Length: 88
Figure 1 (tube, helix red, strand yellow):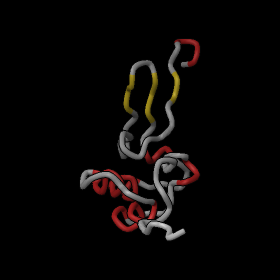
Figure 2: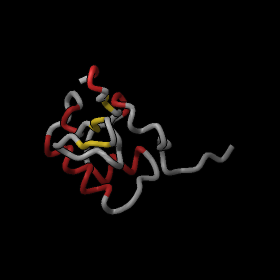
Figure 3: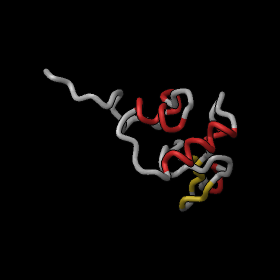
């Protein structure tokens, strides 16, 4: 694949499918089930939860999608940890 110029993108919280690889130009976007420990039911719950709108925090993602953290996959980089704003 690499000799043909095909590469892999990181899993995306807002673009990855639950079970299928997607083609983005000359790169493949892995599905959530490609992540270690991510089952099909959890992957589908992420896709269903994101249809209701963007996630404001990791805490909201956990509540809406009812799944373990995706931090190890690196797809939570744009989310803050909690919904509450710091006072200091």
